[in-house]
Image (cartoon, rainbow, N blue to C red; front, side):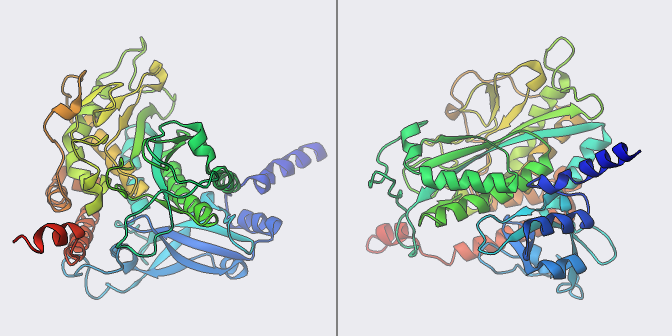
Length: 470
């Protein structure tokens, strides 16, 4: 009996050594005590994927681990303004507090903080216990529940591109590549160059240390096509877990870069004449009980569900483009002369298409969505992409024939600008049923408000070509 008790105690305390995640408040208390945690960041991702929340003493959090924030936290635009609440929420509850409860599976350290600090991602609820439909994490949970009701589990693997740039404190000036350890900025295209990555070895060593401390599972780091443009690939897994990791990774690389007096940016098109930055999402679906990939049959051939998933993406991705490309700048990436897709053609190992089926064994058959940009909210991107595939399977849709040539020779399938994309999103009833009508209405209103803010700014192009010519 003594031996069994000792073994159980050892197993029960294994969480103390884990860099990420515990199962309860009691375990969180022990985990924090083992690390001398004095502060905790209680965070919730908003519509833009920005970390909102409160920083509080660990002792206060452990005494009362519930946080309150106003509902308006999910209505804020990227510029800090708000759309008109009329038609979105009842005026009586427009400024009411929400209850935010921690997901202890997300508990990890904040390795760049000066004092021992932990962070916890929270879920939002109304005071009557209803989940907040506008919360991005809840949107993704709702989509995953649809898969679960069919006996399935979605599996994703994100790839996130970003640029390193010189500090830019005046937005009127263009961004420039930073100076590396050689003392020179990067010139020309250095795709997949190890030496170009090594220019920033000290920064990336810090990044890896930060990620390890948080339990973020990075697969690979590569140099992309643009000057000082990098890509991080994450290991495949549960969509909610991976969305959390992308959310935290964006914070992590920004902090690592700032420590070296460099900016890391996830803007979709930060530098003219350079490629844009994408957030590619690899997607598959497995049977929840057996783990079998439902995209492959017993003979290893593609199944009807595989083709219907692709067809759903072809039909509905244009309608969710305002989620995959959420800002005016995002549409500068989706142009014919760039490396980004302009349509929803699909093909086997065809990187010019919006939907690519990578080479793989049958058990790993998957669909890569190459449309999203890296400025997007990872929770919403994954939710929207999986929603499109789910609708395709549910409706038994059939895709076009796979494309073998250059998809950029084909017409645009995607909206060309933010307002067009928002209008298509707001009018798609099938997506509203999957993503939630309140979320769709709120998200559309926020994007329209952001566009109005953009229209107040006069661009250099207008001054250059219109000032003296019209």
